[in-house]
Image (cartoon, rainbow, N blue to C red; front, side, top):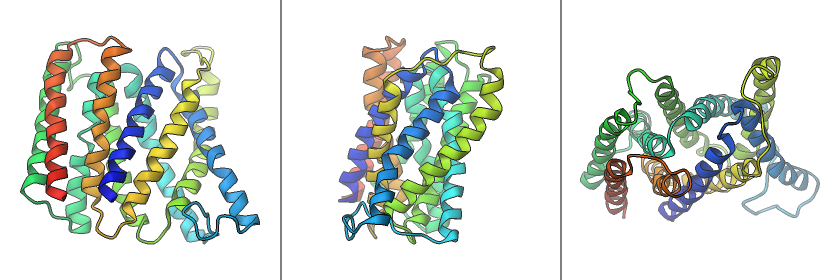
Length: 298
């Protein structure tokens, strides 16, 4: 069941990446990120109100229980980690082709795998190792594809931002596995979104607002709302998958990155990106890796 949830989560994550790319095209990054945090929080605030004032959601997966100060602190730490990943990732998404940035992000589970083996004692079988190896090979080949577009991995700061984003994202994934052992899905998702909004408001006021007239102007787009909707659904399914006792964060993380198939198609059809033939081969390796991991987990 958790495998199926992870694949559905990947589908919504792909829609999220497409919406994010559209929202960020020639647009100011930080206001878009702030509005994403705002809409995401507004989606979950009604669940808090209903849970705290009525018994309508009692016993359901959408009930938000009162939590301790320690749990609030854990949610705040989660918000700091995710926001660090998002700030780096949004800048990378804005400045890199979707057909390049997507497969780079698809290698994030490799970092998660190392952490899962060291921290949670997860072990992979032969099929799963083959899948991870194909993911690593695809990253190496992507560096070659990027060079053909004038993007040198070693000297491009947006590539650095993408790598920082997947590093923080991997830390977040490992932390999620820890949180799901002691906290429920709605508690984590609701409160980390709210704390992320508060943190993002501070970042916006400190970094963007004073420089707004000298930087890229902000333009409202409907895709900003879609970012939050698709992400909220994808994250809820992801957290729920991790609540299963036999779930493996290394596998869930890898499956979620199969969203690269959707982003690649969107990059070709909607954004008319270049060098698709070589990137398609890199993408094929990623997808083969996903299939190997799926076979090894059945």
